[in-house]
Length: 82
Image 1 (spheres, rainbow, N blue to C red):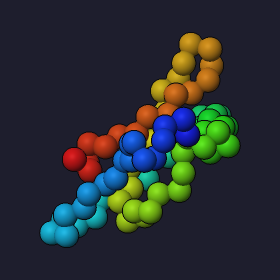
Image 2 (spheres, helix red, strand yellow; image 1 turned 30 degrees about the vertical axis):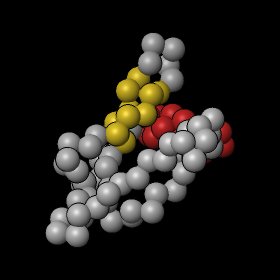
Image 3 (cartoon, rainbow, N blue to C red; image 1 turned 180 degrees about the vertical axis):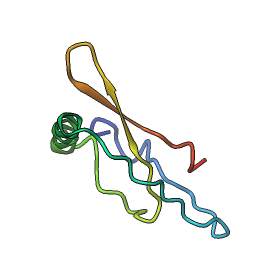
Image 4 (cartoon, one colour; image 1 turned 120 degrees about the vertical axis):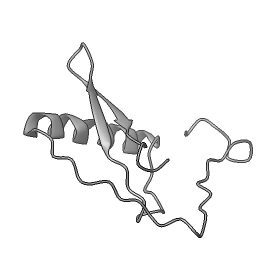
């Protein structure tokens, strides 16, 4: 998160060398939902809330959750990774 000092808090993903990478199967979205997701992801990249992941072989799908105002909340489904 951009407002947190990295000297105080840093999130890391400790990987066990014995575990093989998990890559979830790609989920297809409707075109209108895909456009809303792209808009939200761009907004989060521009504010610095999201960054490019270094663990490219570990992939979890985005779960779009529609809000009442028509926007989309982006969640991540980590079930297969846990």
